[in-house]
Length: 202
View 1: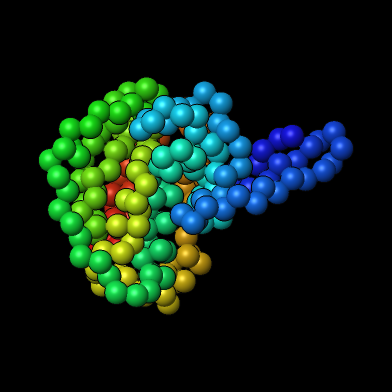
View 2 (view 1 turned 120 degrees about the horizontal axis):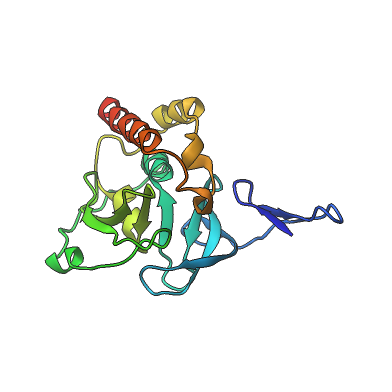
């Protein structure tokens, strides 16, 4: 059967049948299938193709529950989840120095991921690949970001408006396995749009 990752189902062109996996995790991840050739950077198990929040194609480790996602998907998930967050925000905990010493490889290009602070809420240290435009999140890091205090937390109406106007970048919308092609000028244009978008959001 052929996997359609952005829609979350399998389709057989031979018999025209569908298969809809029902494996949503408490993290908002719905596992679809194993992603051949991609190993988890944290525990080396095979990553699975999945959907995050029923909208974003990601790769997910069913063992350590880490997530590999595009930068565009990461920004959208954080914005929407924080806007819909309820309850008392959690006080951010400063990261330990050992969190900056980890060295892991990008599952897509095998280059060493850049380990750096996420310059948003939550005091989280994340790993990213500038070549593949992806971010690796360990289990619990997205929750820390969403639960951190801030003025953008709980603004559901603003999130709904942003969601209605949001259109996925062609690169971010493609399954992660199909990325990497394209000129450097194309990548630079995407980076510039990301920077401008982040400036206007503030």
